Image (tube, rainbow, N blue to C red; front, side, top):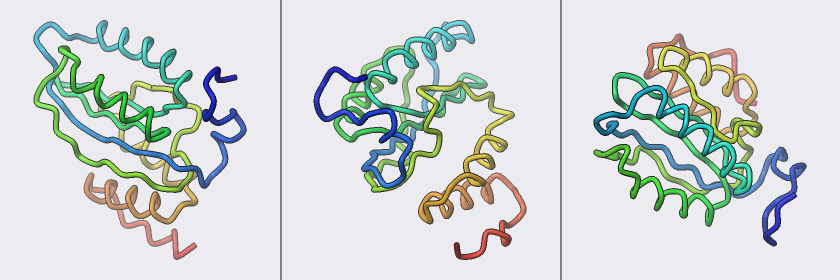
Length: 157
């Protein structure tokens, strides 16, 4: 499906245990960026990210972006350069950046917009489907930070 050598096939994208770079940041929207512009960003990102094997989500509310992306390290590095050069936002704060050998949290999301009110549900869905201990621990910490109940039922699987 991908034209360039080195890109994984669709079946490989859904397998756990691939090397992924994760980049999480927040930023402030520039003047004039509204919901319609964010919808255009999502549409463009979905097309472009599918070709680059990048998945993730974008939350927008009250003039603030929160974005989480993951994919092949080379592609994510290129995306980070684009993000940093995008005039539609400023005050970019890197919250997390890592390279791990793990499963994807949302393998079918080339880029999905998540409403700020729904972020807890999205993170809980990711936690329920996660098998990787690093993902489980990180998602649990984030949800606890958001005021959720402890997830004692997860055990040490």
